[in-house]
Image 1 (cartoon, rainbow, N blue to C red):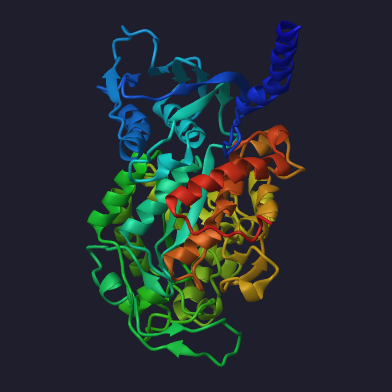
Image 2 (cartoon, helix red, strand yellow):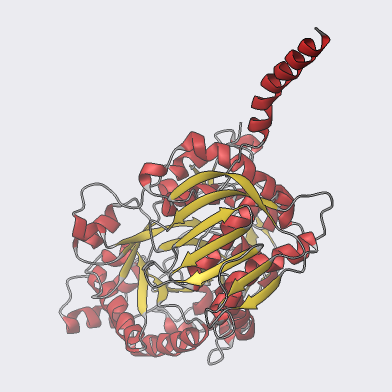
Length: 551
């Protein structure tokens, strides 16, 4: 009888505790952006001192950078000195305790990857090193959050859940703009943001380098651009109100990147598979440059680098000396930035000075143009010809549509999606960045009294997540011209780097999923569940992220 009772007790205990044991072993996959396809599997792969990464690295710097992105985190956070074994000749086959990386021609998308995680190894296939790199970012997100600390974490099992993942981005262009003109970020800060872009699989970083409030890049042929244009003597305090009164902080403010620092940033970003795109504004947003070289204006000045925000009437005058200036400037810029695209602005250019300028009016008459809008089109088209002659392409804000679009220009549509739709219908490539969904200087909470100062507007994370770069109404051929999307962080009111982080995160995660994940895989509630796990990584990185949309 006692034996029977004992057996019954054992059976009851097994029945009670088996579901709990299975539940405890259930894997979670907190990956943002969500992969195109993920098939869960039972079990875990555990990194240990014997783990090695096998990849064809010896003759491929990009492949080395791709695998080093994980190796670096493992070394800094775990103390595990994981070795890289070269497999350029393909002689090593997948084996136990390996992260096995292989390039295969059948994967056409250079950023796509296939990854199989089983108990004794991880196998990754990709068409190019970029795909390997993004697989490594997925592994990083699946590892415990402590992987992001630059100090050894004790009592942590460095495991990732087993799964089969087939992943590729929905769009080739996934970007973020950082305005360093209104307020400046140094090299260290810029590298920090590049790291975070890579973590979210964002592959373009647009640096807004010139504006009315500062010129932020060294141009050796024109040293006064930074000596004079890189500094302002006053900065607006509080919110800009049209017509004033204006209260200023009366102190010298500025900064700029030397050419060596730009090279350092570009090289660093390349290792993270991020392309840096420079923006040199023209023909508007010109006051900082005109302060340094007033002869480029219609009036001759004098000017001072602006300390308040807004749109200003003084712009570049489209005369031969101005075009010579820009050809010289852009020649130096293109030596520093190997990106396919050079952003030339083209937005918010008042025409008042041109209307009252004898030279401009004679140029309109000489060229047989209708008005000042067509004069701007002439300006942009002429710059485009120079940029194209160097094997590059221009991007401009959607105002470059006015007066006629330059032949090969790519349009960045910010005033809604209408400009992008018009450009796509004309056969031009488009990057969607509508302010309604992608302007991260807008508030993310309606409780503005408890939020840091923003420029206005309201873009909560759920709205960012709902962003679809491809609008309805385009044909299949027209839709192919939509290259992707971008978020923009303008910094009239954002000085401290902690404020930059607050405005970026976690909205950047929502933007990343909007431009990576297939539409049929998107679900905001599911995203929020996964984001909860990603926020633990943010905590480990000490990111000052907003909690406004997390309640």
